[in-house]
Image (cartoon, rainbow, N blue to C red; front, side, top):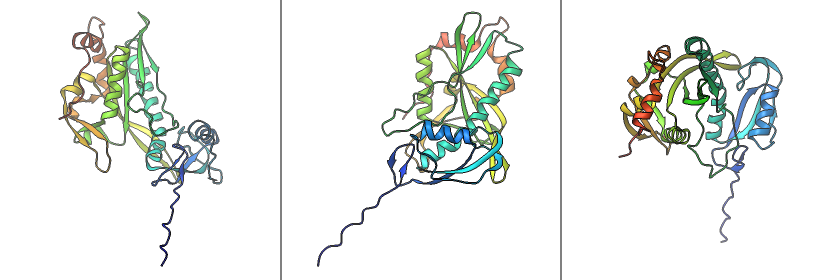
Length: 279
């Protein structure tokens, strides 16, 4: 009796990886025409949505504007779907940090200017891409010297620092921060932004509910351990949440009474810290 031929399974192609993957599914996003065009051109190699719904009033999941949107559908893998869904949340967090700087820091320390250095965007992803090299999200320039004094890295999530048992950060993110601290020879603060959903069924947008800060030395002092995330194969460093304070206290930390930048002075004295240690 002849053997039955093994069935060949053809998985759909992720439009961001441009490769068939087992976890690829149809993914759906409410987007305005402009944002849909941006993803098609800049992230999905020109691949238009497989389906486009009727126009309705709602919130664009990417730009967070209340406008006319349509439900757009593409094939994406689990990782790319998670990244795509986070971009709009990150945009809102970044704007929240810029707004806080404008009303809290600029009036008191006008010679420090915040510059957005890495606007969140969905970019193509190919197997073999190097992770852990994304630039710091913000650079703070001292207008007295014209030089970058320090950076700020934004990390966004749904959780409040008050409700966390510990703050966790992917090892790749820790390595990215350290890479750019060394490259720019400047220290960095980290701001955690709590961003929650705003519902306008069937669409949703985002808004900031809290900002907390720490710096690279506080993180190193409050490091606990490294663990492998559940159901994933990547490590995360865990830090005691006492490393963070409400962002309202950051403006007092930036400068001492003599207008010296505290973190810059610490960086000159201590150099680059180890944010985590592997056993």
